[in-house]
Amino acid sequence: MKKQSKRQPILEVIATDTADARAAEQGGADRIELVAAMTEGGLTPSYGVIEQVVANISIPVYVMIRPHSRSFCYSPDDIRVMTQDVRVARALGAAGIVIGALTTEGKVDRSCLQPCLSEAKGLGVTFHRAIDASSNLPAVLKNLGGIHDASERNVVERVLTSGGKPAAPEGLPELKQLQELGQMLNIAVMAGSGVTIEGISDIVGATGITEIHMGSGVRRVGSFQQPVDAQLVTEAKARLIRAVQQLESL
Image (tube, rainbow, N blue to C red; front, side):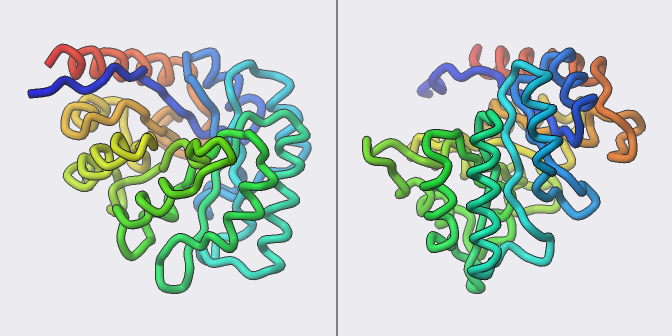
């Protein structure tokens, strides 16, 4: 059986403010997803929050670009707002953006993504869990793999997904399929939603995914009403490192 090519364990932590971001960095997180309004699934944070977080930590900050929680379908007015938000995030020093858009048929909405991606101008790009609301997850991944820059490199670095299920632990077969397709397309697949520290090993072992996205799982009592706990982040990162080492040894 052919070994998976070596990949680094990457832990991304959701932060809603500077204190969250500092705790995540202190605990060993590799990247921040900066959002507002987690009770609505995460919306674009204020410009002030972006500026403060970027100024106070050294790990990459990826900013959520999502103007509302009604759906993943966006109007021309929404697209203008999103494009402006990308422009500001880049100007404020963000390392990347987290974005997603679907047509009413549940397919990738390139007409929405294109102006936003053009404005990103070299920022890292994660396509968020809009993929889990799509009509066909592999088809979305293939479509994203067809978006290239002038150098023919993928514009979208990764997708964040639970395999189309409410929580990632429920979608392990689907995540494995996406991971295998992502390797062919050179797009990373990051598992998120409902991920606990105890469940990291199962996700990595069953799917081969080595990028893990955590929110409530690294907060006290597992609640977004509580701040990120640096010690829980440390435990999650250690568990992820061990799981990836075990994966590489197979």
